[in-house]
Length: 136
Image 1 (tube, helix red, strand yellow):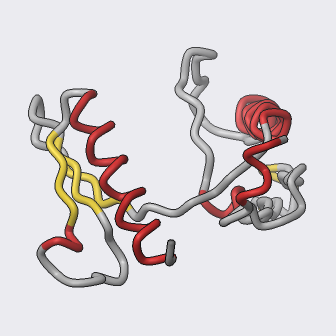
Image 2 (cartoon, helix red, strand yellow):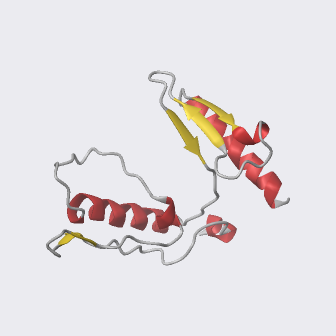
């Protein structure tokens, strides 16, 4: 099976999952052949909010997913300085660059004091198309 076919299957599976959750979704590539920056459009019918989605295949072992969520959530909750306090019930998000093995640089305030600590990604590698990880 070629990569193009795998991509189409993945995009359609995501559309189905989005629709199962009650959101409207369609595959842009069915309108514009191989559109570069967006694969799907998702609309929340309750408020009309629209999101553009690009589908990629990132495969992590169970332990890698757990470690990435644990470390990134700890960084976001405890080492990312913000003006407002956030709840422990805030949804967890994983940035695309983290799936590529990248972290976050620390940031400085104008007085050269650290504002945010660096996030050191535990993956250390790009997880795109690592099909053998399915068996870990």
